[in-house]
Structure formats: structure tokens, C-alpha cells
Length: 333
Image 1 (cartoon, one colour):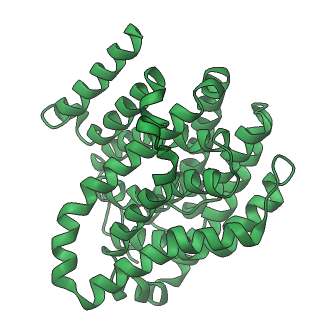
Image 2 (cartoon, rainbow, N blue to C red):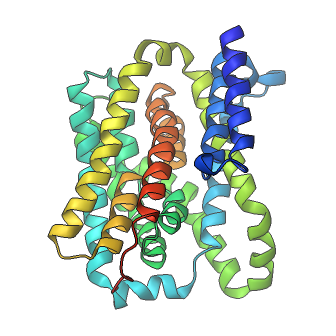
Image 3 (spheres, helix red, strand yellow):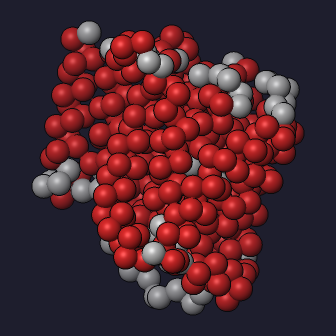
């Protein structure tokens, strides 16, 4: 209990300090998520059913809020970019949905993860790129328009790719029904994304006002999703925590390395290759958590997202900080 309080205070202090200490810059949100996770681990009842209300019921609405926010950042130019730079976008989608699902499967086997936990690692790998990749790409001096387009395209493809990737790679661990998962993705991810895009397209002034308020709410939503997941799966996390962290770290690193390396081998410049590495290595943890609870009906399957998310936030921030000090020529795409 005392140790838990220590970590809650420590991560909260680091989150506050990140606004003023240059070498902690960009890590405020990550430390906030870690503080939420420490609180949930130390006081799980706070995040399971306070007052008799099961908090896991709000996970899907929270994910929808995050995607609504993302939708309001998209414009027609982001989709037109698919036509103007099809090679990079198609390449990004292909790398995203090959490296990460297979990586999840391989590292789940290598580290001997239990069935539902292994399925969760494959699930986080089978999801589209994370929303945070756009911000991290900006900090890394990558190609931000390409990043936004790749995130949008991989998200739109997810109802058709994620269920089949899960059935093929995780079907041996847990039962995976393609149609229910597809419908869940359409409801949880695509619908709020489309609503946000529509608001941006036809009510731009409303969108401008909302995007000032929604991003902090979206970040709070991610922290709360992680906290609920940790609280519900605390016992499983105690048993597999370090092993799952090691598997997630390898999975994340493979995404960066193979994404960057494949992009360079296929002729993309350094700036676009950085973008590709971040798009491949960062995943939509909120979507993975929502599918773990709503489709797989397994809190243990959500553990990988709760582990992968904070870890990838730390590594991507560090990578962006390093890359930002190594200038490159403007991107050609």
C-alpha cells in the first residue's frame, strides 16, 4: 500500500514537472497514465465498481470520444493525399498490418504468454496506428500530413483487417468471431470517426471550439481506460507483468525498427521513414481494450494494451527527442 502511494505521488510529480523540466518535456501524459495505473493497482476497488456501478461499461464510450476527437482533426486533404502519395500510404498500411500482428504472435510464443494474454498481444498488434503517432511525428520532425493520412487509412481498414488477423493468429488461443468484431469496430471506431469528420467538414467553427476541449478529455479517457483495465486484471498482471512488459517492449521495438528499415529499403527518404516507423510501432490501445472487453469478453486480453500503451509512449517520446536533434531535408511526398 505504502509503495503504491509512493509511485502514485512520484508519477504525478513527474507529470507536473514535465511542463518545466526540458528533459521531461513531452512525457507529462505518459507519467499521468502511469500514475493512473499505479492508483488502480494499489486501490483496484476504486476503478472496478465504485458505488455499485461497473466502470468497464464506460470503456466503449471513452474510446468513441477519442475517435471523435481524431475525426475532427481530419480534412478532405488528408484523404486526397492517398491519391497524391499512394505509394507511401499503401506501404504504410501493408507494413502496419503485417509487422505488428505477426510480431504479436511471434513474441507471444517466444515469451510463453498464457492464452488470453497472448491473444491480447496479438490484438494490440492487429489494431491500426495510434492517434498519438501524429503528435510524436511532429516532435520527431517527420512528415505530419503523411502520418495523419496513414493513421486515418489504417483506421478505416481496421473493420476488414483486424477481425481476420485475429481469427488467423489468435484463434488458437481464444474464440474469435469475425462478424461481431467487425460490427464492434464499425460502432466503436468508424462511427465516431465519421461523425467527427462530418462536424469538421460542415461545421468548422463548432469543430474549432470542440478541439480545444476534447483533446484533454481524450487523454483523460486513455488514462481511465488503462486504470480500469489494470484494476480488473490486477491478479493476472501480478503473475505475468514483467514477462508481458518484456514481450511488449520487443513488439514495440520491432515495429519501429522494421517499419523504418522497410521504408528505407523501399526507397522512402529519412523523414518519411521516421514517420513510417512511428506509425507502425504505435498502436491504438483504446481500440484493443474495447475489443478485449466487448468482443473477447476478457480483461486479461486487455492487459497487453495497458502495458504496450504506456511503454510505447515512453519509447516514442525518447525516439522523437533524439530524432528532433538530427535535422533532415524536407520530405518529398
